[in-house]
Image 1 (cartoon, helix red, strand yellow):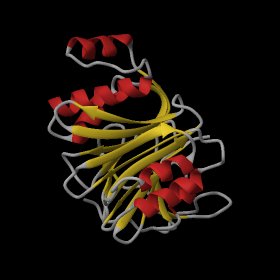
Image 2 (cartoon, rainbow, N blue to C red):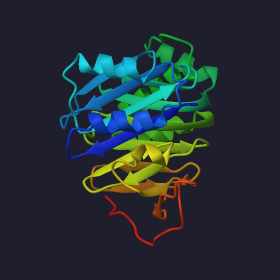
Image 3 (cartoon, helix red, strand yellow):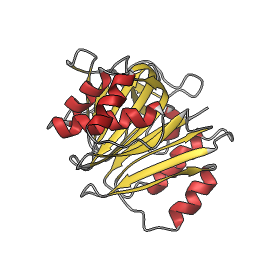
Length: 251
């Protein structure tokens, strides 16, 4: 199994992130990563072989501090990855699932000067994101353009220096929930990984894209229309319950 977690808050989120990843950990993780940014969008980035303990030890060796972060645990790099995208601006994406893009996408980016380190679909996905972020002013528009070239089942969480303190997330076949706290919001494939900040969640529907900040979130459906999804309370046996009829403030 694998899992991804993202948190945006008005405080340092490293402890929240590691607790969230610990709650995702089923003991089989052999590949893990983390990216954490400060309020200026400067990112500190780790990705390595090993389980969560290896990631914690590496993290403790550096001055990692920030209010927005994304991370993952997986059995192999083929299940989940955390990739830096550099097309003049810095972005980091965490991807889980099995996505694919046509070979023409890779060839086009290579012709534009991008050098790939591997043949993984995750790296290609992040390169496409960096490419479209360079062409579009809006990170949301860039994500929409990237999605048009992808197929398969996956979930994605993005940090971009253009919008410090903001997470963008996408549900395409793999589940994602937004956890609604007080002065802190989270995103995860497993609601229980965010119970240290909230027991109230919004589950994204197929092809939903969301923008998540410490105090608010906004959701668009697959057609690009802004929508409101029901907030539900966490139930341990199910991971969710019926809607309580309220909504988090929108951006």
